[in-house]
Image (tube, rainbow, N blue to C red; front, side, top):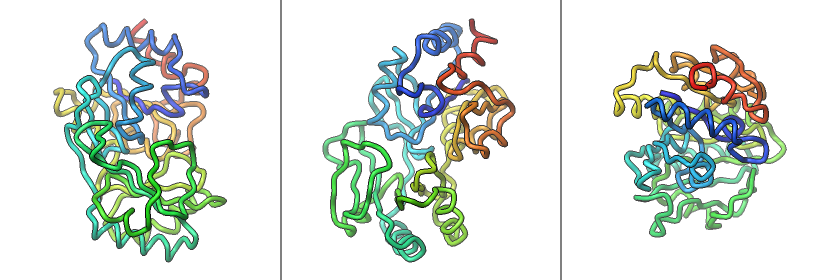
Length: 266
């Protein structure tokens, strides 16, 4: 099985699947090898990647909190932070990271489930990237329903520094990671990582972990890089991802994923 992160890994700096990468993925799929996306993205942000690949894979979304069948637009499994935990995390974050904004990522039955406001943010929340799906609500509403992720944003502070401050105080009630160093950290239910999501998919498909090749570039990829029989960090990767990998490939804008896959599927 081949599993890959999306942003900073599979797609280039223009957020495109290049022709070379698409060809490499086509070849492994033609050989009967399962191909899985493992991303911090929610299911509703998978469509452009599917369009670029010309293939709709199983997806580990929300840093492992969601297993999504993109071919049938169906949420197969999810793990959430409950309302009591969200309230506790919000109080903790605001006490330790004064001025931070809070947001929550929720999930419905499908990627674009209109019955569920899928991304809600407090008035203080400043986006780290364009998010046209945002619904601005009160702080109380952000934590009023279970969420696959709580996002904490503090512009001007590195995500690594935010983790250093908050993580020791979590008391095992959430897992913390980040996918950008631009003042944004993400909290999931305890034990939820890309590795646990991939392990679930591998079990569904009857794939042993030592037969898994995984690609990633940021700290949220570290657990799956360690899980895989062969973990590959991109040339543009965060130092923690490179340290966890068995190999460092070329950068994402140099078709690093394709260069590695072409060894076996050309």
